[in-house]
Length: 168
Length: 109
Image (tube, rainbow over all chains, first blue to last red; front, side, top):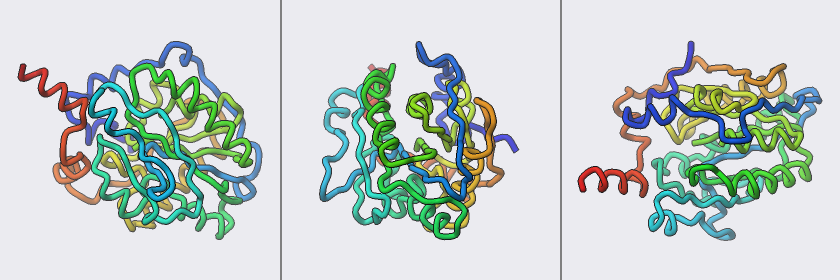
């Protein structure tokens, strides 16, 4: 079965995505070999759901986005891997937030990863996972120049052997 | 988000991107792609549906570990349990996003 990438997209948005092209400087393949056995590997998760620790971290900046609709908050939040759904806030103005807040594993499957680690399918989880907020200014300049290097450095420090990213 | 995957991969850490829009992720050269035909906001399925969450994450991990070349794409053969029209309405925010509101206002002006 081939997934229909536009099944749930408003029809007027389809041409924008159907003709998506790599950004300047992003038009060559990139590759890193996955070295260990999966059963020995430490895995990190990155979501674009706009999740943050509601009692300890600032929300992503929805007010500025409301005032500047072509802008999206390019920062990231570092979340403990054992975070409970009740500790999370979500700031993402482009999707209904209710289901992710009910069970964050539909966007950041941290408890599922811990289950697979306990069963020996995967070696383990990094101590932290990462959230960004997926709606971004065209060109993705801050993500490319600041956010991505910061996330990569964090995940390297945490000993990640591989990363599962999930846009919402 | 594929650009984050590419930058993390270029820094030496392998990545897999789980997405509702695998065609787009392929077009912008995400290294490994797992596609799901799920409504936006739900890359790993429905709240509380641990069986589907596990199936998607397990496929992602096997793709991460087993793919041998850039551009690998695996689509997951799981159907969303709600009718399309219901799911289409349910994933959208109660109020249009700022950019959609701006475009709608422009269209009326």
